[in-house]
Image (tube, rainbow, N blue to C red; front, side, top):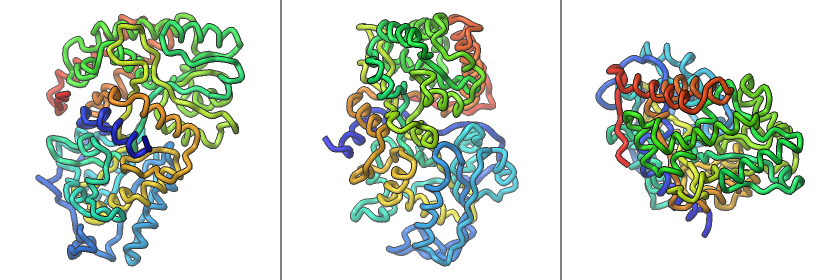
Length: 471
């Protein structure tokens, strides 16, 4: 099986059931029209210019300057300029998307392209409900830039459109394919003679062995403790099945207090009780905890597959980071050990009031070309949603393990989307509950109660638009 088959098969399993993965929430905006209301610059549509780009219209691109950096975007912008040499492309990068762009949305002068990512994202729930995001349907119907005989939609992995769609409209391009799991150093484990544990009892036994060797079994981003909610929820879903996630996503009463969630919370509390977490972790941010892990101070860390790129400057030679699924609670799990969470992510949008709306769509066509996707993967060690784009690329060690994990997971891939529907629920309420739980200040019952109260508060808030996940 080649990588194209692997990605198609896994994405079909892991994405089709996630109608809005990758969209996150956070700020008030000015309203938009019924459909696309921008487009000051209008060109003539033709076979060579299917989106009607005005060749000398300026393009304003704002990128989130996070784990992927901004060099990949500069390369995409250069590809755009190759096609439209008369166009001035303005590039800017920030870690505070909401703070930087909220005033521009309010006064009706947003950029043409926004990488709406990071902790300071704009509230997608608010943007969508106010029609402030452009419809990307024309992009999907346009021919691929460099894959003959195919539309842009034809080149995307199964589910890539569904995860960016709201109420049947494709509004958000989630550009990357991200796998979430537990990471360790192959080199460290080989040197110590350790084997990654497939069951929870084996994991606890391994943690005891690791601690005895003078290394902390775990560390985590204590200032962003929701990172630890990911393996906990994954443990529950593998134990109780995908319906565990659907109930949480749909804000069902007591979804956070299901038997599966109770079993998972009890299991993860043992990590806290037995002091298997690096001392001081509650005070670390994501980069500090990841760096401590790279330095060998801890054996395990929970993260998405952007980890390798984000840590490339401090990762020792031969570290060989590897991603693995969460251990199984036992033989009664409904999903196998190999099942792993994967989804399209890293959201990009064209604002509905963008002046160069056609140019924004064309920029996405550049990103979704095979050349654009391959350049991204080479630069940041991350997969994109463009099928077959890893062909011919010499992938780094960690990304190869991601592909192997996807292959092993097969049709058992899973995901949840409550964090995408309701940003506040994960980023504020669950985050706070995780902070108390993993620092040892609360136990499993209180942790789940706090999460459920947070979900109930969102469910009862009439100002928050609700979305329904059906599968």
